[in-house]
Image 1 (spheres, one colour):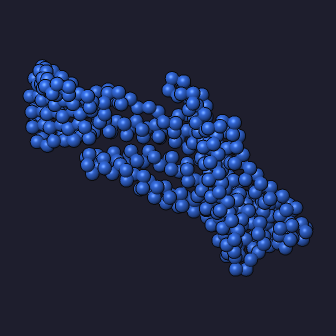
Image 2 (cartoon, rainbow, N blue to C red):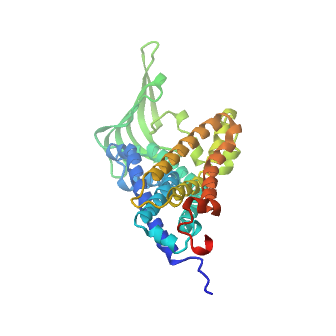
Image 3 (tube, rainbow, N blue to C red):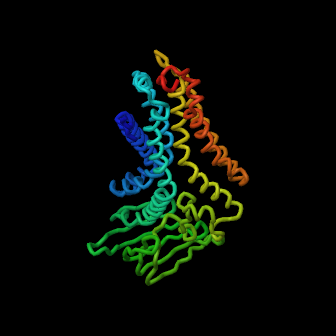
Length: 381
């Protein structure tokens, strides 16, 4: 007696369609989201002289976070579409007539869901925090160092809304001549600085101009008098904000799971601890929604009886169900951030729909009753 192989040709046929569709749909949506989100950085290219290469490197670091968000959704869409097409082309009917059970028909989708869950875990736990940390550091560095590329001869360069720099000439060796700086970053001490010459140097967090033989002029707001201070050497940071705003604080998306579950009290207030803990649970439970959504799609296609002209009711109900679960997960996350005792609901909302669908789909009595035994082989009737 021949033993049926663990992976059949039908499994490979269906899985190939699923994985190609998943790559195409996910890639297309990621490209669309990347295009819309990167528009806010176009200003750095158009008005700040940022190169296209740096622009692509900066915005490319956001792509892992996009994939982590949409992968459970695209998994559902792909399984729903491919199996619905197989049903419409009567291929599922032929597979059932050959004796394949719901478990056998669902094997390619289960393999795809397993890959999606593993990918989401890798993204949420490791890849996204690392890439987003690099993105924030890169963005901070660009915004604070871009002034070095903006200074042009004979042009009033507006580094930011409250900092303007003028350079009369720039020698081949980098020496700046005829420097004027209008510094309004501190509203209480708006100053105009003039210097005969200077040079750009790299600081710890931002470029600075070392100015030689100049003067600093301020108007006293109380008396209206002009105060002037001459200097032989003075350094001015070319940042877009005042000194106390230069420090970059970590976002929750940059933190690891350990940092979120045990936030550092030096940087996180007690009232915000629950928000970080909820973020950790959402990262860990989020990948499981890919399996739940995929099982919902399988139930919508495999649990229904045969319809000659197909149907839209079950696919429509499955879409509404997934949309409702997405809204529910978002609401539970917001509630749990205020009431930590509700954190277990995050896991229940991620796992329970998948367990219910798996029970309905793979329990023989339910499957047999739903199908009426019409497509089961004689030995199973």
